[in-house]
Amino acid sequence: MSMHVIVCSTNSVVLDAVSRAFNQHGHRLTVCESSLEVLGAVGVVAPDLVILDLEAPGLGGPLLVSAIKELAPGLAIVAVSTKPDLDARALSQKGVAFATLPSGPEGAPHPFLTELARIGRGGPARSAGAA
Image (cartoon, rainbow, N blue to C red; front, side, top):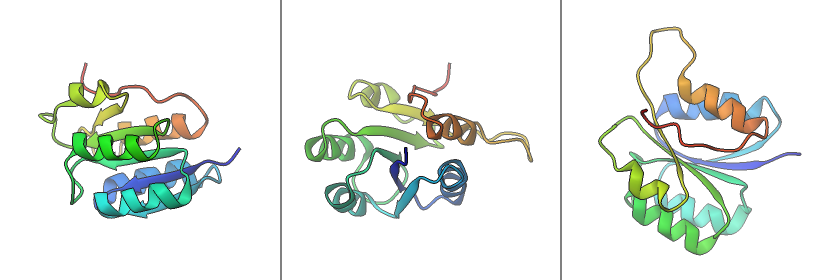
């Protein structure tokens, strides 16, 4: 079954990871560069999953998540950030999976790519924050 995924990011690492993880399985991907684009896309394309880079321009993480939940209450959301100081707890209380994007050794598969590939195969989203 094909999924429609919206990704909101201007980070090339995030975009590459999402693209490789979902395109290879035949899922549709809509790329947004700001939170306002995401809000518009959620109402138009009926996605199955939204991946939010919390460092993308526009609304802050908790506010954006609340707005998306208002538009599409059952929509799965995965929030990502390269800044571990962002409040993952506030997002997880809203039912959002959160992944901190650690910098790994050069050439190693990015942990986020591994998680996205698992989700793309139909596995449930889970929190992937620091342990």
